[in-house]
Image (tube, one colour):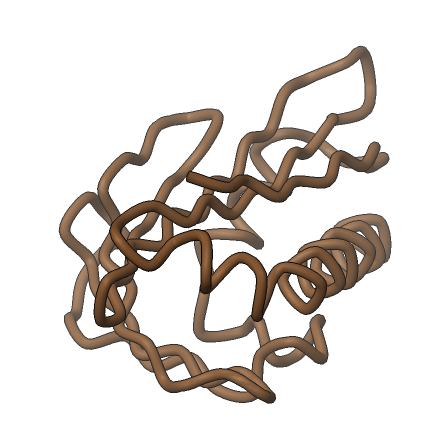
Length: 139
């Protein structure tokens, strides 16, 4: 198992940040790491929600929400021999938030996937964190 993460402070409410994060179809508007996100179901974003995500340099992936509460959401995708878990944690710190984005590779081929895609993964989550900050602080 291999994990990558980044943490950033954002001058916005936890509710605002989590709303932007959970509006996954709009991610391409604020991060260059996502080309397209298509929800595969209707209704509120919830545990069990699925989305097809296209990202530069990566294979298309179907992500399924496995956890969602007032502070975070986690979703999972699977590729042959690898499960990828992405966490999005938003913690309140006074009038700001501390956001931690993480990606964890697990499964039989997780070491290979981490070696091949680890640098890109870290670059992507750092880019996403900055884009999220800019989007949330813009209002």
